[in-house]
Length: 610
Image 1 (cartoon, rainbow, N blue to C red):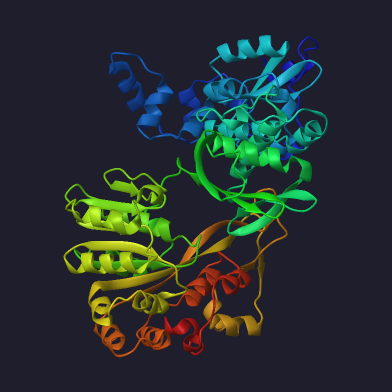
Image 2 (image 1 turned 180 degrees about the horizontal axis):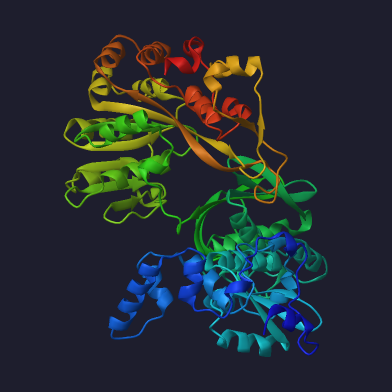
């Protein structure tokens, strides 16, 4: 039946068009309907006749007959989306590259388990008086549609979308269906508060049931919302008249919701229960760990509870274990700095240090370095607090102060395990610093982090630890300072012409910016949750210890003198690295200035000295 005949058939109502769908990209291949998949792909110029013939011959030669589409995808003649688009055309079904998620009513999935939708890549997206419209990724699989007819007691109409689009839509719709913070708060005002049940570690929080007690669903909704909005930390802060919930997103704290003060104790108790902490002890700080799953992602939560004036302050750091670590070439190092850093971490002995404040990407850079050098012929051992990423082929030890497993004691034990490379999560005391230096001098490569503001001040920090200048100058190969800058949302960022004052700050002329576009943060959109920024990028300062730097360290302990010499020798400072991201259109000038500071030694030269 053609689309016109379908619309004129009074016994079969037309497929309902959800609001605003008319603006979405659809495909009109009406002239290709009822043709074979091969013909459709040829006429839409996705494959050639030669490629089709080759795929058909291969299909005939195989013992078990496979679908033509599987053969074409395996040969990489077409993408999965191209094949799905052609199939939708052949079956006279609408095809959508994307879906208007904000227009999908979450009530449509009230009676449907999320796992059913995920397993079958199927999702109800619109309803009228006669039908429910369902998006599918495999229109030939009719069995889930039969199940939906029984569950929803209605007729089903289909549209087709790629599997990745449907998977994302499932997560977003179920998140909205379960983002019940206000609803739960209303229930808390009239219902009984309970917090005695434990959280199943393997269950997805988006599968929360209405039968669960309100406080449980409140905690689940806070965690699910934090993961959805890419928060790195959740802050739950009891104040005099309320409990404030804030998320740290891309390094910035943002207020998210307010909970009545009378629920502070129940909220803290529930979180302590799932973190396996002592709920009766409210006088001393406690630390714990929670493993959860949200939208199919395995999330590791580091929990800290601290007694304050109006109750217990809770901070949860979220780590997406399913994301894994980044490769070194994905860290945002420019080409020259990347080559220099690779050369440092490929040495057989010495110390490479990464420095910066909390949350500046130090550990991520170290993991990337470990994965870069991780081969079967070297023994890599780490001592960390805590182990943030599991890396195959590397022995990782977690600090446990309660049983005496400190950085220093763990490092001594590691040295008896015949290591080639040692990674120390953080050098925070004199004992660990001295053992690390000694290990590097005796033939080991040591990678570690330290909390200082820039590369040169790290030298002073180690001298304060009691490391002798001659030991430091001979042991350290190089120091990297790192910061994370928020990147502009590409969906709403605004191009503009910088003023002369801004050009002077950047250290470039207007002629040097020809062909470049400078952007500032836009008004915000759905993609960036109204912030104007989405994601972060690293900026770096690399101080390589050459003979001149080592000689200066032996003569002086002044960090400014060391930095001045390094800049004269071509070191790119953190601020200059940040300005280059501005010129590349990745971030704003305001963000670059906010996250980096300028020193006296940097004031002359701007970007040109790099």
